[in-house]
Picture (cartoon, rainbow, N blue to C red):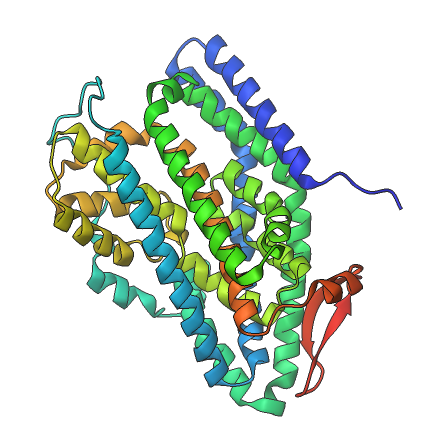
Length: 438
């Protein structure tokens, strides 16, 4: 059978062509207004692609998470896996914030900027009140699961699915038929995902072409120091995550990294963690992570394990403070770090949420919110890196938790199932079977 070219190759080609076409448009169009108009039309395909992803993400998270919990069999197993996952998430989050804090202080990216700073009183029009601790806790529980799904509130969907899946597991034999139906719903969502992903290279092309048409490549040169420092921080974080994964998975971690190349580039090029979710789930299947673990840990990671986003928040806040010549003591920076641990949760489902979190934190420490205007022009390019990092962090987290829970197939078992997709269905109370590719 002829082997098809990997989607990763087409995504890379789309990225390169998008930058070239965007540069040509930026250079030939007469003014910024015309560039914005053309970019708006170019980005239509990207907008449609991301809307299609949003169309399926809520049902995909609900169905896979619910079935994963039901397959665990009891609330004790759910609690055990949840505690292990949260332990990893908190540790990874602290590592991300600490690396960002250390590198930002060492490199002093905002000092000697040689750029005109926005006036301290300039408004950014970002609503920062929504990220208070009180509102975050209240926001955890959905008023309606239908409303949560309609708004793609990932964190609320996770909470509802935890209750639903645990109750379904408690029904035992009586809930078996409904579990099978919800499992079939998950397979339908994954099949739809496969069709949507055929658009990915074209969406990547139009997305980058649109950005470069309006921003040009000059903005990258102006902020090259900050962007270089931030991506260096991400590289350090990737190294730490891979090293931590190696401690638990051994050399197999490199197999996982190879498998997640496609969702990594997809998240990077679309600047959307959601776009990579279905592909990460598929990559974890191929790596050998049992679906009842990956479908539980991965949605939680999308709400609690946003390593790239948290590092960006640290870099941005200290960059703005340094640009305005504001000294922050070590104690103040540690307090800021702990505050970000709380306010960053639930960012995945909110557009440009990192900017809102940063603005809220700036207000808490009397740093001019107007400094965000320095970064808004390059935020899309930075969002690409932090979205891809979120994909890496969540993939490794799911694999490690699976290892802890004896939910990871050996390499021999994975090779033996090379021609099947692990679609776990309840066939009896004692075991799960693997469904073959249709």
